[in-house]
Image (cartoon, rainbow, N blue to C red):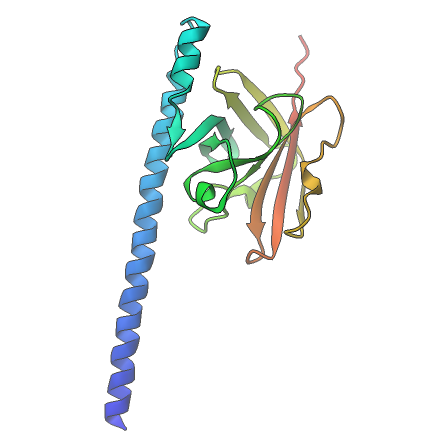
Length: 199
């Protein structure tokens, strides 16, 4: 009996070590990815707005993350995130960055929708659960034009429900953030609308 207990204990220890290695490797991978994304944001912000349009376009074509084209930056000051947005949504792309799920271009009229993982360490859209109506989100395109948005609605939907990509009001600039919640059973939706500043 003691021999069986010893074997079980050894197997449990080996399992714990393997689990620890896997968790540690994933943590290191995410940390390296965060550093890479910060460098891409810095690259975008370093675009010289004084250069001519042709030079800017040529420089923008070089901005990629792991082969994915970057469209701009999302910044949410309240939860201290600032990420590049890549132009396509797929399982692989979402491991790399915040992804464009729906819409035309950043800050165009309509609803620009983004998807991001809800990582437990708070990276990507892992802290969007702390956002509230009235909080601000900034969107910057590759010409360094920034539009500020204010959150007006937060709710959850079923994974198959894609009605969140529709604009709430026509002829407005809106953005929508999508991430998993409730153990991947639902999607947390955060909607924001452009803040119109009076001159």
